[in-house]
Length: 239
Image 1 (cartoon, rainbow, N blue to C red):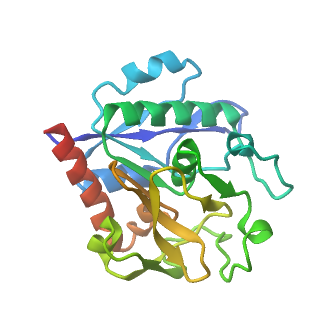
Image 2 (cartoon, rainbow, N blue to C red):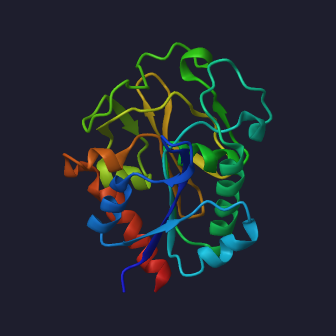
């Protein structure tokens, strides 16, 4: 049986003003193409339900989304901070704690990478342009597209290097980024202006990427190895 991969859902408001669960279908497509079975883990304010909701899961993907409340890394908001949902942050941090207890592989994408970094004691640039040292690239693209925006350099010896080699082109849809890596995390890739683009845990099956590989897969198979490698790790853990 293929591994069951849980995508940790987000929250949003519909045009009618209702509070709703959201997840781009690109994540579902990426998991299916890699040979996994997608599973949607809903938001709940009752954290006692989370273990039951994730009972049979073999791996977790924490997807992209809006900003994280900076009080979780002991900072006050700056004017450039975007939209936050503190209740969602609490929920996703609890799901990450459960994933650690379960010992299953975890993939964090964009906001998901940032949530996991904060959960492990790291912090973030609330806004790259306002806080980082002279970023060269515009890391936030105004229009959705499925192409790439800049190059990243990958650290030799990392899982990412094994998949892609020393450099790849990625897209860029973020205004926040990891500033200080959390406990046990090592940087595995940077953009040419120094912004951290990927990390991996030294001992646990946790990989974090700042770009959106699921969107790139819409027009180019170059990111397929990332999801294939993740699904293989989930399958091994399941076995």
